[in-house]
Image (tube, rainbow, N blue to C red; front, side):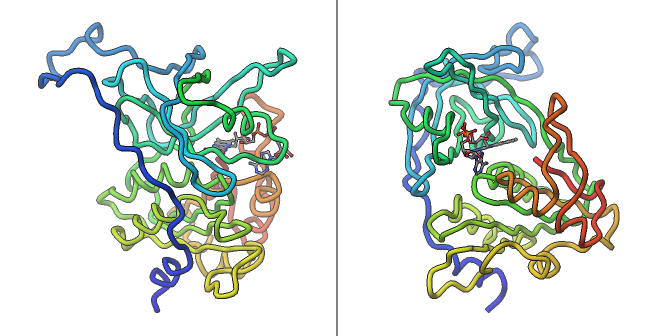
Length: 301
Ligand SMILES: Cc1cc2nc3c(=O)[nH]c(=O)nc-3n(C[C@H](O)[C@H](O)[C@H](O)COP(=O)(O)OP(=O)(O)OC[C@H]3O[C@@H](n4cnc5c(N)ncnc54)[C@H](O)[C@@H]3O)c2cc1C
């Protein structure tokens, strides 16, 4: 069995139904973009400079502790702002009057019309996760952005390696879905770590990408696997990284991306430096450093 078929066999169906698009009120006339002036361009639904309220339109369960949540723009014709890759800041005021702000990565398509969609994982005793999970359809959340993260330039790297854990898959997914269409076809491998099989997020979507794009291969790692599991077992190890990631010897042709909970970041790459505003990349540490990668070959989301 090929590594791709093997990886696909490891992860079954994980996502629920997909809600099909927002009805817009009017059929729109074709527009000649060249004749549009800035004044004619619709106001973006979200901006980086101020929080704006968006309404919860739809929710479905993705895993036992994560949900896909869709928030509507005021006008169904508005495009979601943001380039590859970006996140938004979500905010609410807690019962003690304190601001809670957390970054989330859209999983809806770039420039999607009418809504933005997030995959939200609810950690034990968490602030934002619990608040979002308690929202009812029609409730609102404050949001601002987009805030750029890793900026993709076609042809810049020949080999991408990705290491993600839990909800750390969301920036990887946003990136993969767009860049895999690039005619330059860089090779992309992903090591994705979770505790149980049912915790794997966007497994269907990742496998669908793998089926269409032969230059993409995901490898799933579980610390608490079911009996018949054929993927990686335990925590992400140097051996797995050597087997699935492009080696550091590929020099400036290689980019390794990392995203996950603090303990995962510490073990793999060292966490970001949160003492700066905005947080900076921090020193490269952990398994990537031990394997000989340099800091300019690594990006921490
Ligand atoms: C650039 C970026 C993009 C992100 N995109 C997403 C996204 O698309 N979806 C998403 O669900 N999250 C995403 N996150 C993480 C998110 O911003 C929050 O940090 C996370 O949801 C926890 O916030 P909270 O208020 O729910 O929990 P908190 O109240 O901050 O923490 C509650 C408990 O959970 C633990 N905890 C906090 N964060 C994590 C974590 N990531 N993994 C495991 N345990 C944790 C804490 O140690 C604490 O014990 C992203 C983070 C970054 C930096």
